[in-house]
Image (cartoon, rainbow over all chains, first blue to last red; front, side, top):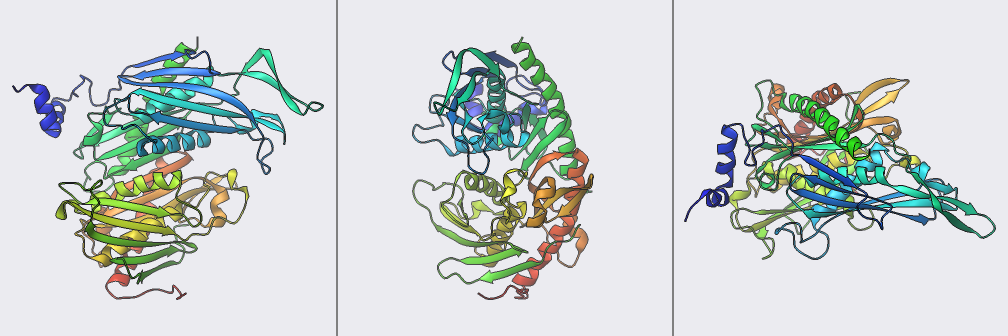
Length: 279
Length: 244
């Protein structure tokens, strides 16, 4: 018995190459097409804000919980943001149960840096009373179906959940030495421009693939990630040798420019989807 | 603006590893050791190639999540440079000890970089010299890394190669470029133009054109670093790193 899926298993490279020769990818997309995006907000009623993001088959659920904490001594007005992503065994066979996988830890750290550096949620806006009480925002994302490109999907889930978040109005009562929260009045977070990430893979030093799936990911020898915040790029990284060099040796430069341009188009799509969800 | 701080490199003589080297840009410095091919533990053994295991030790404390992210990047940097298929079912172990002192000022929570990006560059370079010195592993090329920053001076953006710790607060963007030089030829400076960018990251707010400019500057500086590698490996010169 031999059919196309046997060929895919035994010779994944040749399989992908055959598709790319026809300028298509195994899931029917063109190399520079992203997968369809679906957003739902507010589905977790116990959280202060939540979002569910589907990027093709990749599904991420994200909940935001706010707690009151004491600020650091050297930064009396600054709150805390703690993003975390869990890629557990339920989302794909290659993840094993147990402590967080290296991949999950790395994505968590990348998200932490993106959220901190984009300053989309100013830490000073989380202050309730200087030196006494600030909000700690826990952003917990869980991957429930892993089909590649978890970074882009998780960042989108986190930013959507943040824009869905409502915090109770809180004030510090000096007599009781405690924070009192209103049951009725809730206010949204003071969010600034939200960051968006776009990941690209390069196959066989030639083909640029946007938004790789879990089948394509292990076959890519380089990846490029572009994080945009408004009209500015806030992070561009390239891992691996990139595309084949032209004789002038300036391959990575044109690669960056191309990736940033594509990421800007993608950003517009993402922001449109987010604003439609929030209507 | 395009000058590196004082570049120092030295072959170290750690006893129980195959090779070790120290590399520094000014005060940013790192010590790296390479062992391999050595026996791989059953869990990490790969059937068709050697396993590359990189450990990064911070100056104080135990490795944390930032080191883990760095390790995963460094593994991707060195994988194309080493012919892993030459020694299947073995282990190549690289240990990099960070020796850069933390930036002096305490206001670093405001700035973009909590540590100098050059800290990362010297780690890559130290490991790279250790690989050359070990000569027990076939390489496809030599890796050199250079940090670049964009600093804001009176509203004007200036690109700085290898920023100093005191300049960190003025940085609005910056990053590291690592080049894989596959046919190194120390005598011919034009040859380094063929070196490929094997890893780069660029953070902060910036225009795309600045990244290209930064890459050109990093490439020029990377060539100087490569020549330092040669003078250390082939001529045994250890420029001015005092014995301690």
